[in-house]
Length: 416
Picture (spheres, rainbow, N blue to C red):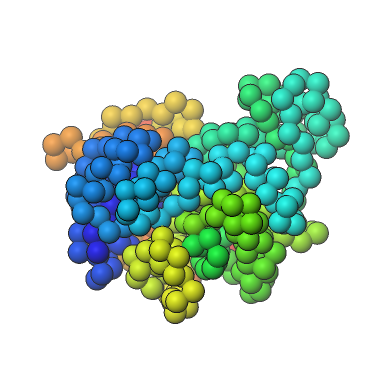
């Protein structure tokens, strides 16, 4: 099978790495990719938001499967264009991807499916915003209705900061604060059958101790030693399957990756948000633990044959990923800085630890920073403490001027 992956971040590098290890994959392409992905896949330039261009490229390459990584191309309908060209595509239609593209649409689907979530108001005027903030009180949870690359959510005790964020959005969802730890659970679905993956936890705040501004994610780990062993089955029954069934009932079947962001509250599991694609950085740890070859699972989702697959197999190992971010991230990041030490990690830490590229580009033999989140250092080990130690040892070999990372990823879960 020839596979084309669309995107250029660490999530896509993780997908490409897993696909490159799959004996069924005879050729692997990525568009546009990055400096790290170039080591495992052939890169091609493409406007990832142009469905016709993506479909043309897939046709020229003779791809038997296209995997759309990021949310923006999915919401733009790129998967629809690929399918219209007769090529199997892993990723929901533009209509179904509204589950991520519009928080208000997602709330409507959850209401129809009876999925437990936070109470919320959709607001479009200053008066509605004030009324909603008043109704819920602090801490205030304010979400831009549209796509915001992981930075559209503000959680604050400061009502003025909450109001300012709400007023900066065209349409905003204001909801009650959900207490309890957060969990990310991915499921692969073909619109009928739902195949949950292993849960992970990510770290959204920029600084140690969950301080600082929200980011796209600064690290993740899996498995979750503190979680109820029945959590996955419970979420499948109360959240994932009902949502997939509701979307099919509405005539907008969802096939691809359904990502449930969950809060384990004192009143039970509640959905914080849905995403329509693999999450970054959780994908890095979930795929590090997946034993089943990936391509066949993604193709079964695209072709509607997930019910014919044997159960997924998982490694007993734990996995930890730590993000190295540019100076000033999540503000406007500094880019163009050289990255050193990548060869040292490959020579001294592989295969237990490795580096997945996010915002990087090659310039001659040099690798330069090219985004906010630059690298994801990922490691596996017999338990979280071992995986964590390997990840931070490998991270210590990497040099990027002005870079930042959290030092407490998986620390509590590992017993630290």
